[in-house]
Structure formats: C-alpha cells, structure tokens
Length: 210
Picture (cartoon, rainbow, N blue to C red):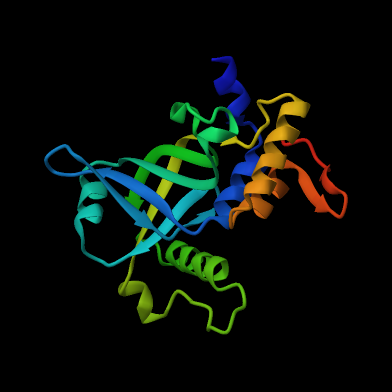
C-alpha cells in the first residue's frame, strides 16, 4: 500500500496536463452479451469531461446507450528498464517507467448542438494547434454527421513511475543507466525524471513529485 501511495498522481493539474498532451485513449463499454469492448480513440479533456467523436452508428454507441457505465484509460510508456540494470541473470527484474490515468464514469451521446460544437472545436484545437481550419459553429451540417461521446468521471486516478520511489542516489544511478543505454526516448524520460544533460553529465534539476 505504501508503494502504491508513492506512485499515485496527487496533482489534478498534472493529470490534466497529461491528458492534454496524450493523443490516444481507450474507452471501455459493455456490449449486449456483457463483455467489455475496448476501443482506442482520439479525445479531448474539456470542462472536466472526456469528449470523443465517432461515426453516428456503431457498437460502442449502442453500448453507451444501453449501459452508461464506462471506463477510459490513457497511458504512456516512458522507458523500458532491462533486467540487467539490476542483475545480469535475473530476467524477472525488468521494469518500465510509465504514466497512466484511469477514469470510471458515465457515458452518454451528446445531442446539444452547442456542446457538440465545443467538443469538436476542442478536439481540433488539441490535434491541429497550428489552426488553418474554419472553426465549427452550431449551424453547420457537420454536427449531424458525427456523434460525440461524453464521459463524465465519477473517479479519476493517475499513477506514475519515474523514479520518485527511489532514494536520490539510486535515482541518479538509474538515470545514468538510462543515459548510457540511450534509447530513442531516453532524453525525454530523463527530463521527466528531473534531470538535464550537460557537458559534465547529468544534473538533477527537479524532484519528480506529482
């Protein structure tokens, strides 16, 4: 329980920041036979709710109409930690640094045109921040050609593992190993962990506490 507490994201702002940056989430609905259906979706976190756009017909829409209880999940793998970081022979010691947010809530199909407009404009602003499109307005026909799914959270829980559970010396040692392995994500991972790369090596600039 103590470890789980240290891995929990306690900052609502950090959760929002994470959701604003990530591009793919997964919505879980219950189908007519009682099985969970999980589908990756583009999404925007707007006014404390998740919005997704969809075709006007489909199984997930039927599921939400039938049963409003849904789940939504977003995750980012930061860095795979090979087992040899800890022991050259024990493969069970392989690990992963990550960030994730899990939501349980109520899903519904949005019919209000102004809310649909806000959701679609929010999606465009997130995925096409450079603009170069005509903002959507409530009278546009496109509103009738797409469905908007809204998930209102009853519970939001975030978890992160970026070395914050380690003592300072152990965290630096891990960072040095990540730098030496030099994966494609290493520099970004080290930044999130609170390190910068300088000519002299790694410099700890921030405590990774969320």
